[in-house]
Image (cartoon, rainbow, N blue to C red; front, side, top):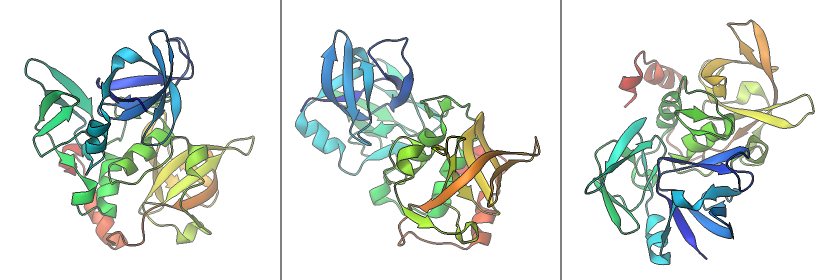
Length: 282
């Protein structure tokens, strides 16, 4: 098995081996892939995080050894900075929120045989007290990020890329697309029983799952639609107060958070996330 690691800030993954083809997802710095096929400068890859398959240019990847790959899986750490540089000996690479920090020791990380220094905020889910408050704070860091089909970064993100990356930062694996994520977790039978941190899924006119968002307190939802935004949710769907119209029709609510996750009261969550300045999130 040939394993490669993303060595640039953001690498587009496309539906076929052409720069003109549809971007179906992105790799963030430090994420690993298995190469399945070679076609010129292009590589058909399978993302090791979610098994998603697509094509990317080999120049955006760097091969790592099996032992380096195994070490990268131990106590994985992720950047909590919207954008921050990792510094090598004579150059730096800007990385975004959600990027993986391989073999991170609190200051240094390794990308194959290259060592970098990272001075930003990071999280190691296995070593941190992951809570619902933290999940919702991370989600709010993406507010106003523009919508981008296939995107997974604060500079462009789609609805399922948003939920997948937010949950990744607390160590929970979600699949890539909304139509895949809907098959994960436990069904919540009624909207009244839903809790902050649950995922709400919405159907299109063809009755297919086409949208997903993350529930907040006070019957609100944060989701990527035009941009990452907060709207109202009820038993029918998402209501946009600006246009006074429903934009998405609710199909089902799922809970993917573990039962043992530290709980807080709804009032505590509301007080915790009532933040006027995004800089105050961490």
